[in-house]
Amino acid sequence: MTRYAVITGLAVVITMIGVFVIGCETQGQSGALIGTGIGAGVGALASGGRPEGTLIGGAVGGGAGYMVGNEADKKQQKEEMRSMQQQQNSELINIRNSNGSISTVRVTRSGVGYIGPRGEYYDHLPTEAELKPVYGF
Image (cartoon, rainbow, N blue to C red; front, side, top):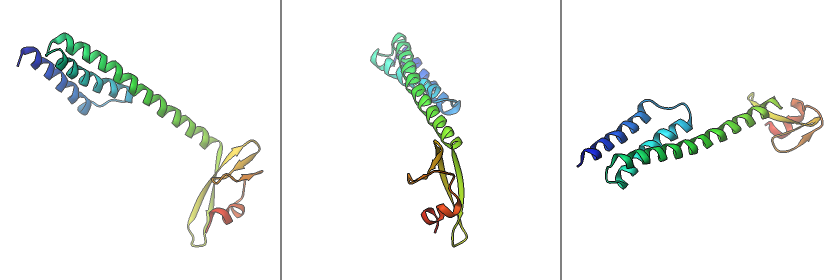
């Protein structure tokens, strides 16, 4: 085994340990770290353990990993925003069931009315009595 292969192997191992020990705050950071490790390993194998191949592989892998992870971060952020907006435009109505339990029904504001979970439309904020036949037991 050449000196370069040993150094490359150590670089990959240190990078992978960093993933598990250090951790990352975002998926973009995690992707960059994992991509760097994998890219360095592939670059080292493809170049026969030469440092140039390891560095190039690490750089390409890190960039690719960051891009993939960053897109996942953006998607997650959009989903969180959509969920927050939906919660702000909705009301929770508790329905007391015949056995004493409570069912919670979320109705979402739509124009001047509200839409229930099954798609039914109410021209006003529905009351417990109106929702009980549909969602209570």
